Image (cartoon, rainbow, N blue to C red):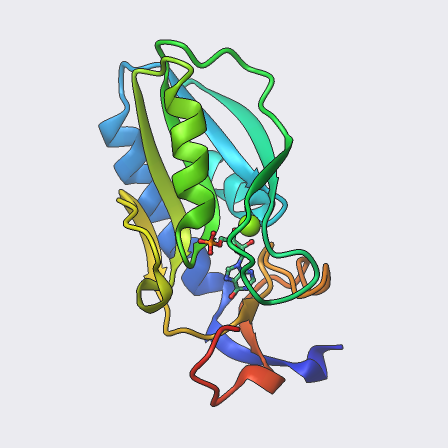
Length: 182
Ligand code: IMP
Ligand code: MG
């Protein structure tokens, strides 16, 4: 399986160092506020687990699951909530935690849905960001790494549900050298 993935894009050490930096920025910014981190399933489950363990504040954790890509690596642009959050977020500071921001359509939709529930604020923390493939503007307040428009897997990210458990971020070999994510 690992033969299909080019290992070198981001090592688990690089990810870990950056995650700790992001967590300390979040700790600094949210001191004294009611913080709710909301992970976007499934991709953000690894990043959220590592991130929150370095945030030195009281916080709540919830998850939302959306469907947009299906089994393909192609964005359909259609976003649908499959699993909603359970927590009441009214008056609280929401931090949406994403694995990667690509077109931005998923987050645009989720931010809109969550804003209607009366939170004190909604911000985004994403480990990975692909600025060149953005279709809608998203303010990613906490950003781990900017990537070129490649399709990446590992550290929570999948291709047809595979590779999520890899401890690093790699590029699928079939996408190497390609300038396209889709
Ligand atoms: P967006 O709505 O286009 O911004 O897409 C966001 C979602 O698409 C992410 O949460 C990922 O699940 C998925 N995605 C986008 N790019 C990649 C990638 O390179 N590898 C794996 N999943 C990706
Ligand atoms: Mg995702």
